[in-house]
Amino acid sequence: MYLRSNLKALADSHGISIRELARDIDYRFDSVRIMYNDEMERYPRELLSKLCVYFSVTAAELLTFDAEE
Image (cartoon, rainbow, N blue to C red; front, side, top):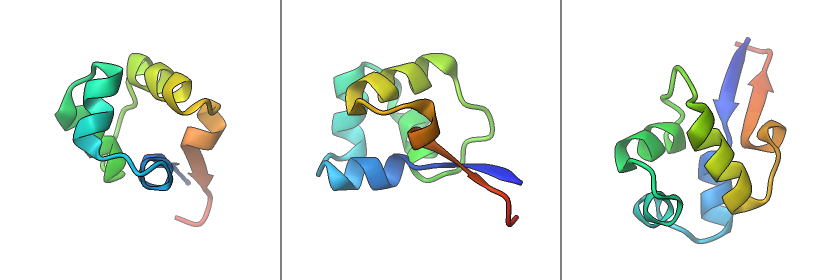
């Protein structure tokens, strides 16, 4: 059971690059890139909060639960 980042799908559907997103939310590029690539092991609250506000989504839409793995 794993949490999966849905950030790539959200960013791609809005036509926004990782670098532009990091700049817009004023957050470290490397952290945004790691979450975009679904490589993040721990999700910082501040990053989750900023992304939810930016995309107008809930945490449940930003992170998905994968029971298969």
